[in-house]
Length: 387
Image 1 (spheres, rainbow, N blue to C red):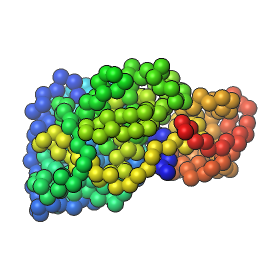
Image 2 (image 1 turned 180 degrees about the vertical axis):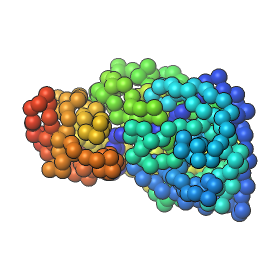
Image 3 (image 1 turned 30 degrees about the vertical axis):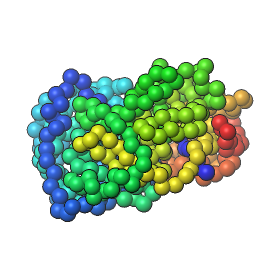
């Protein structure tokens, strides 16, 4: 049985407004072999690859929910030219004006990409810095090839010939439409209406729908929540009421999935907590995603009922399940968990505990908090929700 751990990081769904599609159609790719095998590192439910630019190696996120991105550092090191500036929005609907430029060359193992349109972002702010990511291989770049992904084996392959991936062996087919930056969007019936789910390898969660698409009258098996459990490119989401619920059936393409777990948030997403149970092929030529099950892990929600963010290097309770008599409150400053002191950390230690939670793999934890100057200890058991 698979545990669903709540997504504490989200870098996805960067969208452009009034942007010409030609910008994201730019560039070309060269292959050295019919099928190129790419390094892949799947950590914290996010996929990363090593990228070479101008003789240096960088860490990039492989993110189908975003366009290609480079850090401000790379932009200045290469002395690239600004094409123009446009407002872009992140997964939390925050908007900022960013530079659009063109990257002359990037290598991904033996793939050579040239003149790819890219957005420049500051990737050293807030929780983003803890990912130690230098950029994103985005949908506009992926769309130039066919990709086969298997997270459980840390494998990523690319080809210009779809037949080499044997898509006929993949029984689940998800048709999609492309947004301007070529992100794949899957239309699906949801509670007697149609919604659009972004197929997002930059989302570490399972399924998410927006609050406006949520119907509490139909979500009988649910736990109500409050706070924020995600971070976008421009910061954390605004705390809000929400829910996690069981869905009797969810139709994706030619397959009906039963008893799924879905959370509410700021976007409609399919993420890696679901995708890790499949090998999948991304096909922008025919606008299809092919899925082949590789393991059977019925979705299960186990949680201590809260998550926390580091604010000014101190962990603060940011998200809770509104369970009866739940002891923690939004804004509680966490002093320690299981005796591990967390309230006086330097930057490296903050990132260590942000990415490697003390409570991970524990069944019972003791949490000491500072609530308005009063130090309080709580013992919290991990619970299974939505049985």
